[in-house]
Image 1 (tube, rainbow, N blue to C red):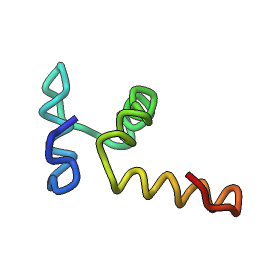
Image 2 (cartoon, rainbow, N blue to C red):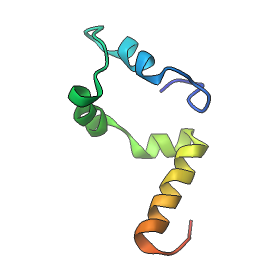
Image 3 (cartoon, rainbow, N blue to C red):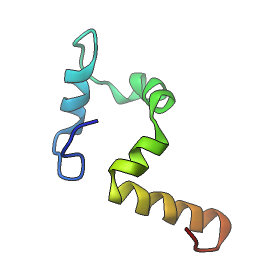
Image 4 (tube, rainbow, N blue to C red):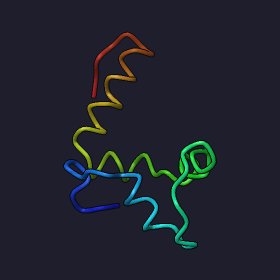
Length: 67
């Protein structure tokens, strides 16, 4: 996870540079593997905007706000 994840630009470029095969990140092809590897707990610990996103999704699903 990049240290400046809240302000990073060109995230697809960053993902391309992180690939072991140095190939280009292609959303249609790579999205399923990326989603499978995505660590929700780590994202929540390291990203204030992700925590807000998760809280908002939870509200849309449950209709209640909570921590």
